[in-house]
Image: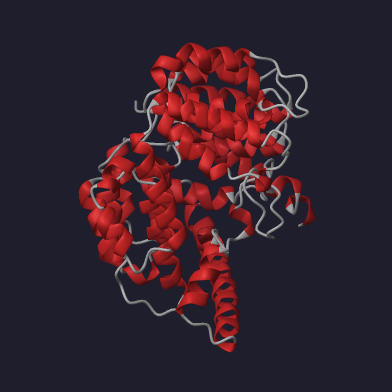
Length: 435
């Protein structure tokens, strides 16, 4: 008996008539750092089938997918569209196309450098970032490593992400990973360091960035060291550990995390559950079911339930159904009822409550859509009152890098994601407890 739905079936659901089903199918590939280059062409088919005017959410979810020369060409053509700036769906569509382009392999982008620079629909910040990444193609490993060390030294007194140009640091990491093998021993040595004093210490930033580098390189030998770092109560470091372990994404990661999961504190289990949510494997399903049966923390139960649904695991459907019926999960992390109905739809499986719960989910989605439309209408009226020209509009977009997620239903905000109130804090440390 199959434990999980085959990926070919999941990919077909990117063309499903229901938008939320399409989103979940795309996120299966994008949130797991998939290398599957055949996914983006299906996303393009969906955009063309259901219309670009309301496809900004789908394109936003596809921004982490690997691209090809053909898909880059398509994105550049779409960026030339003449949009209605009063329609926020269309505005966000162009913005998210820019995100797709900005995240593509710089070697591919180099082939389209002239078109990128001439694109009227691509924001100046995206162009600048793309050109930086293209320029870094000429950097050898030593240049990259020196740049990384300089970044950490310059910012050694800075404590917070918003005080440093962390995007530039990640660009260095990307460039360094291409020539990283000869620095393997140095990377492992740095990961093994136990940092006790961060005062004026470049390791404040080097520590999480080397974790990110090991993930970018998919360095399996670093797994035990990354897990030790994940035990440290530091959100930025923990995020990099989560992404690194998820990028490596092998059963070795699952086994290593599982060995310490049950006895670890809630900080570790929370972030480790996010690793489980991103990795797809039969072993992951088995371990998630085992941990869920013993877990008492509602938040972590929710994350484990999400991991089972994100794997489209057959046994996971009943396990999550029981969570919903018993109410032993945290609805502020996600709407598990909606997630379960989406998974059942994609898997063509039916639980007893399917029709009833699908209707309830549909009502909540309609209410959320209404709130979004009202918000965008207010935003549009405000923009019209100010009589914004194209340059003002572009500046506004550049100063609001998260405009594509400017509205989200609260039930879909992950506890480790930025709080939608705009505070800059994580949702779990800001508005999560204020509902």
